[in-house]
Amino acid sequence: MGKPVEINEKVRYSDEELQEFKELILEKLAQAREEYEMLRGAVNHSTSNDTEDTSPTFKVLEEGASSLSKEESGQLAARQYKFIQNLENALIRIENKTYGICRATGKLIPKERLRLVPHATLSVEGKNEMNK
Image (cartoon, rainbow, N blue to C red):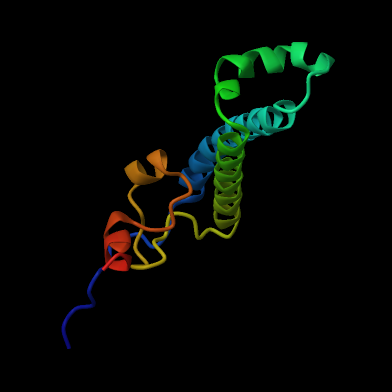
């Protein structure tokens, strides 16, 4: 029999690496929730003309989101909500120590991809396989 093959490929990210991703995700999550609330506010305020229209939040929205239709704001809010859910699911995978493992190939998703798309569950290779 030959010598045992040494496998240097990591099967999961270390606790320290997972903590780094957790901090990144928590930061993105706070920002995403803030944007979601603003979009929801735009949908809710677009039909009212009461004193809420003069609130600082409404003034900020007036510049950007108020130019969107109620339907567009609603669609953006729905997309933002899905993004929040994906980030929350990524936090669960961090707790389970399965974060960063491609669900198609079982290999680690490169850190560069996770920094850009922290809720990714597929590596580029895995995504290409799924799209075939």
